[in-house]
Length: 249
Length: 233
Ligand code: HEM
Ligand code: SF4
Ligand code: FES
Image (cartoon, rainbow over the protein chains, first blue to last red):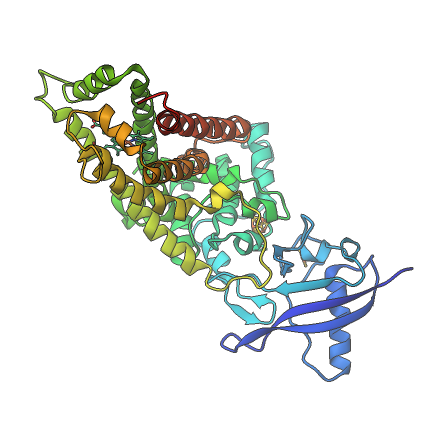
């Protein structure tokens, strides 16, 4: 099996307030079947053996479903394929390539260490309205609340967001519109989300702005980067919900 | 029971002017007002092809719209005030939002990549060019201050004088190309901001924005081209 030798330029930053810089590493014997994170694991093993600090990066499921992983690879959030970093395979690179690896860049996502950023601003956006108020307990009867098929499809499509933050990283304005709209649309099309339909969008957008994310200029970079295919028209739908909620006051 | 929410304490003007979505709405509405004006303005300019009498009579007629309900020139002054409000609202919102956007992305990527279209990338500087152009244009063809002919009531002769200078042609054509680019992204974007776009309509919307931008720019540019080539003199 042919393997690859690669040059990596990785953002190293010891802590939130430390100076960071791109540092160059060589890795060899990379299999095209490895995932991007396995390639970084290989590098980290070598760094540990050489008594150096391994590169810090977030990851959990490594199946493309949790949203923990994420780094900007050659200027593209999650790299050249429309998938998560953990599901990106090294076959998309060639022997001898130089790969630039940087953390998500946004004022609202401060760097914690190396490629790890603090995405808790997303949690606060969700906390301000990304839920429904319903009695808990045993699962409700599935037919109790009828949902038209197109609405159910829209809700499912938007519920796919895994909160990875690639949309913010890709946006030239560091805007969180796609992430926020995915949740607003997911809940606002459903009857279960109807009681908080207006307050949800007003509060979530309010928190989004307060957290220091930028505004939307409809560049479309977010939807291109999104590993879950949340469509750009999701933002249009949130704008519609926002203006509707303002009119209803 | 009403839920106690953060938004519950905010007034409608605050929800519009203090949120990114609301401020974008102000930009969309003011932009569409200016666009409607520009379409009628472009069509009116085509009068230049029918000679000085018709063009100058048209410019005079503009001042009589609404009479006798309105007094002479009232309509044109109402339109000017409305347009000025639109330009100012558009510019101030653009400036404030741009400041926010730049602050939200303080560190650039070392590995840069261009993906968005030229029209999308040039909205800010293109807008600045248009703002400067509006000032020049008013000094040129409204007040006549910088116009080589500059006689009130002689709109036709003023236009010919402007496009008989090389700098007149350069200024207008550069501004009009900037205008076309601005509208190509701006019209489509405004529709998204107002929540009127959808997946099924998207291709038609993009095509409409491109067509409006092309027709508007071509219609305006036809005037300097006609003067340069001697079709209008
Ligand atoms: C070849 C292109 C253009 C020509 C020949 C032209 C010609 C004129 C003329 C003759 C007037 C004065 C009308 C009158 O005295 O009643 C005028 C007014 C005006 N034009 Fe244009 N124009 C052109 C392009 C533009 C563009 C691209 C814009 C917008 C960015 C624009 C914005 C305005 C505005 C705002 C006024 C109103 C000023 C006022 O009277 O208060 N024009 N134009
Ligand atoms: S919208 Fe897409 S890119 Fe943004 S957080 Fe959700 S899954 Fe990630
Ligand atoms: S590690 Fe879970 S999505 Fe990549």
